[in-house]
Image (cartoon, rainbow, N blue to C red; front, side, top):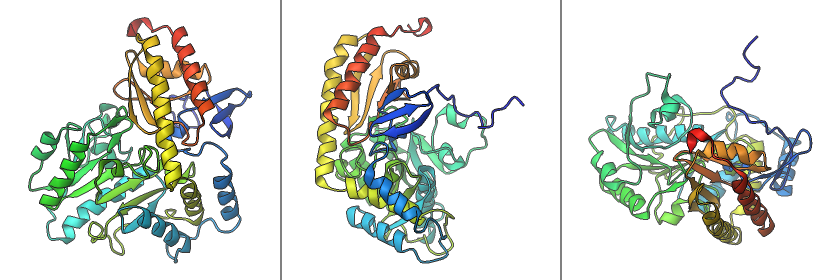
Length: 396
């Protein structure tokens, strides 16, 4: 048999973690890695955090799953916490980010359907976006690597240039249901939208009765130094997808919406077998016990500034490789002058874990509770690795 037991859809690296502790991962032979990838912005409290670990252990011994056929004291409690802390009035829990985005898409379309405008089904989306790998979410992007071989794509999406308000407004027509976007693009290269762009979209939605749908799967849950990035922009969306960090490593997501936006989501319109199970709710509550307070959020912003400053001081020493730093909070990216994926692979051999992204960017997504010593270790090791790195001839 030529095919591997794990379907070979990932180019898996030689890094093979078997244990984690704080911001470190350990491989099969005891090799140690400083994890500034955090499971692609998932392990926001690092590995083995005592609050999260205990909550999962206690809940696993009590009740893990019963299905959504029954009342959910655990789901009701966490949903109430989310609505108290955000713009939203109601929440649907999912198992992943892409499911949360799917729910958001359905919510936006259903809003117009029950309002007597079924023709308003098209969401305006943005170039280089990443919303997941289902048929709907790959149809919402223009990235060839995600859509090649999966035609026909689903209708109902119109892709325009990111952070270009004129392009976004010019795409509105009689079929427009709203806008779907990451306020800070992750996979697309750590690209925060401008405040003018986001506020302009909000104004257009208000004027045209459209839905502003945020995908905060990667940038949400304290990653930018705000509980959700929309707070940085001074606007509120109508619908928002959240996942990744919300479970701290336990797979879960959520679709949040205002009462108005969710007017069409009634009995029978959506569902999930596992979504909102008691074990996931315990994980989510534990994460929010740690991050949902001003002290923690302030610390993320301050730590992000220290890390950014240290990187900006280092970059001139290796200006043949690095161009600059961008991002918000602890969602940072280094724009590179050479292939970011090759350099990320090289860093793994030096015990540093980061993540490549579009636009030749290296993503830096550490746990949100890193300390000064971890920043020094990261920057010192990164600088030493950059000094050793030989740019591949084909990339030079």
